[in-house]
Image (cartoon, rainbow, N blue to C red; front, side, top):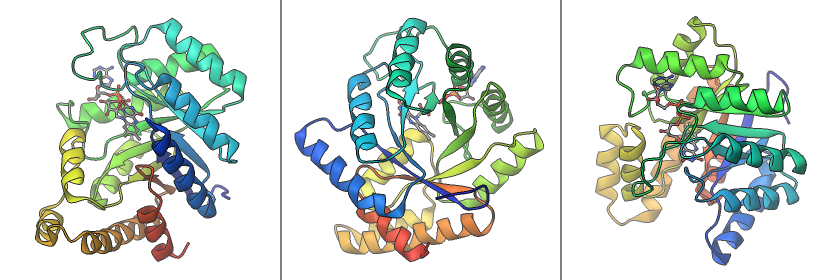
Length: 280
Ligand code: FAD
């Protein structure tokens, strides 16, 4: 649906854990095909815990007609593991991958793997497979939670792009200025690839605070206060969430964001409601 001037929309799913989850994934994906995403992506459990599940979900989504990109993280993996996974995807005709370092789940032991950071994974993918894959990497407008300074974190982002990434998807945020500031600073360092904002729908107060705590995304005080006041009133939380996220997306698109990447959490309702409000 897109040329270089049309915003590109993409959707992120996670691999289902059981049959009910599989049905939910297919239902959500079918509902969301209406918005003609440029591609969809499927997360990967760092350390390989969802290796088969990610590949299966990618197959499912490709069978529905989506261009699907598996996420791939290098933490806890050997070069041979990564080579095998890439080769399997290549054999199946997958042309996109989201390349990440990942975080080893607690309790998985201390083997960090053979590649330390995402820039090394991007270089490895290019060495092994040339230009076969379109590579997306992660970006953190509010700084990666383990980074010590915004400037060094930005340098690490630039290194991933220079290693051969074609585009970036950001961690979600609710403060558009953080995104614009990050893009300006990245461009000042020579980054020319699209940096697509990651969009998290607001549907569940507790879950949003938990995710945000883990990934270092700031939920502004006024949003937290409004959500707290809604208590268990799910309908009001959803309606408020659609308003807030629609306004954020509109601001991003009006001011030059090259597209939007929705974290769907395998549910179509909230992203589709935002989509409808955006009247795209
Ligand atoms: P990196 O870019 O390697 O950065 C990690 C940290 O190391 C940063 O603090 C950075 O500043 C620092 N760093 C980078 N390079 C160097 C260097 N050379 N020397 C010193 N420090 C360095 N996680 C999953 O497990 N599965 C997923 O599917 C998944 N999908 C994601 C999708 C998106 C769009 C985003 C934004 C995140 C996703 N994550 C996923 C989370 C991600 O794996 C974590 O945030 C992880 O901690 C960092 O991964 P990265 O690829 O950004 O790492």
